[in-house]
Every structure is written in structure tokens, then in C-alpha cells.
Length: 174
Image (cartoon, rainbow, N blue to C red; front, top):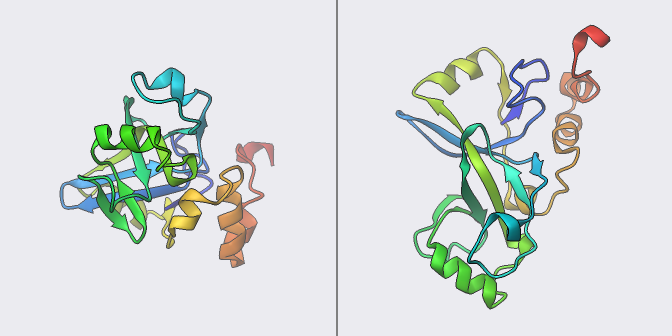
């Protein structure tokens, strides 16, 4: 999902959110384009040294660490959320795989917190046109430069959306 530029929620200004789960109870997603200026090694104790970036997944449970990865066939307990993208899994196995260099920073994304919507809330926001829905790929998540991701997607969508990428953060400054 891509946030509409005038959404008005600082938690989601110009964000790209990957939905991991959507059902009648609610929705869980992760903001893909907000890096956190924290070293993995300082944040995660009792893990091998690892040069992975940390992202702000959203405003819910910001003290918890979540992860998306490409190694679902090797990490028990992971859930495939789209082709080639897996959510979570056994941390002890992940730790071993990092130590053995079987998981590289390009194979995984760590998130502090997540984005959550209660039952029906996201559908209401979609009907209000607060979000655009677009397809995603594993390459977008793991290989695309995230700086400027929101703007890049807006330009690729073309038409009126291509104009959004230049919209000011504060429309009163326009």
C-alpha cells in the first residue's frame, strides 16, 4: 500500500506498507521505507555480529523486533506472505544461519514495531482513498533502494499519481 500524500497521519506520511496479514480480525503490515538509525548489533543482543538495517515497521509494539526474509524454506515457523517473502520464524535457527553466513543482510529486513488496523479499519481507509493498493515483489522489498521509494512508485504509477511525488509535505507551503 502506498500512502496518499495528504493522509495527515505522521506515522504514515509518504510510506510504503507491505501487508503481511489481512483477515476479518484486522490487518498487520510493515513500513518498508523508514530506516531507523540503530545498529543491529546494538539492538539485538546474543546474536552474531550482523550488518543489517533496521526499519520502523509502524507505531504498534515499537519495542518488538519483527523480520521478513527470503529463507522460508530454511527457517522453520516462517509464513510465506507472498512469493519469495516470508514473515518470522525460529530465532534460534536464524541466529545459527547468520553465524554460518547462510543469511546475508540482503536476505532479510528487520522492523521495530508493525502497522496494525482493527477489523474493518483498513477497508474504511481504503474506501476514503487514503491508500493506493499496488502489487509488490520480493525484489522491491529486498533489492530496491528505499530512499525515495514512495516517490519512485508514484512516478511509476503514472497519470495523476506521477504528480503526487512532487506534492509538498505541508500543502500550505505550496
